[in-house]
Length: 461
Image 1 (cartoon, helix red, strand yellow):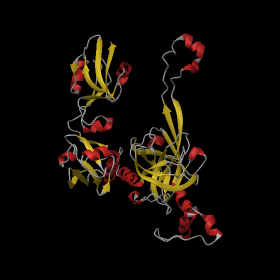
Image 2 (image 1 turned 30 degrees about the vertical axis):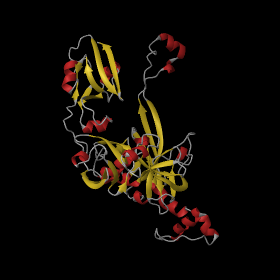
Image 3 (image 1 turned 180 degrees about the vertical axis):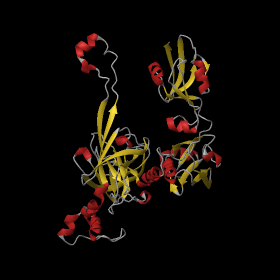
Image 4 (image 1 turned 45 degrees about the vertical axis):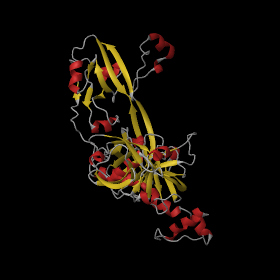
């Protein structure tokens, strides 16, 4: 009954969002339901068809005549394979900016976008971020398109009616209804996204990714990105990326950025548990405990230190590092944010600068030449920008592998490996790698760190 009552506001045309709801008075009001808002919003939700070309991998047994005869040539095929990806997107501007999920279009070599009136456009990704699972596309030769207004997602409340619009299972545009069932969800979504989500019980299924989550006024609340499921279908728990973060992505795309720049906190933190709160003398377990700070961190420069608790960013409560990162991201690089810090029994509001991760010291990216044991390998010194790019520990120093190259890959190296030593010598800078791999002898031993583990690789030249 509540769903029907609230939907009647939409039947009155230009009734303000704050208008009172009423009990349906006739059969016509009951039967219309959400039709007006769907009619208004659906044209701005598009279907996306992405083509991804993946290189085939040659099986090492394929060169053996026995396996070729036994299994046939289909046993291994190194030829490129074409995969098709299906998803949804939302038009954000009349001149053709569209938002979708990175996992739908991020690796695509060809993208086609189809509107509800069957117009087709080719599109290119102008800005994408795998971690946030957001991609901004630009439709080629598009103009005067219908688009959705972005609502301030901080004003969304649990219990609000909502609609999810997308193309689940490729059956065509579909609308499902529900409510906002949770806010500030972190660490619960599947897929690429790692962040801060709006939770809804509106049915979201494969193919809905990148589609719209709208309110009863037709404004965009969020971008549907994932579901929590054990069966592969919707179980009533779906997650959407908040519209405020989408707005910052759109702003950066329209400014010409080709990669998303998020403010760098230069800190590691942990959720405040009841045990930690008790040990710190806090009555309520609220906030994020700072567990590590980089020496160049703007928080450290503003006077924060390890053990401090950050409870609010710009007046909004934060309870996890992901939520704190989200708050800083929507504020944007170049501005300032006010952090509320708890230290002992003291409380203070501290202003910090929102900066991008600095390139200090210089990375000195180096490609190894043909006169080395691993020609084509690319290595770099570690600085905050490199730490962010390769998701390294905050305190990481030394040299990281950017690209192992063909010979390095054969030796077992991967992008993101940190080089600790070569043939017993310490590695502190890219120049040390070049020196160590120039005439290293017939046997080479490389000590690396990968995912918190120490690994020793040995190979012969």
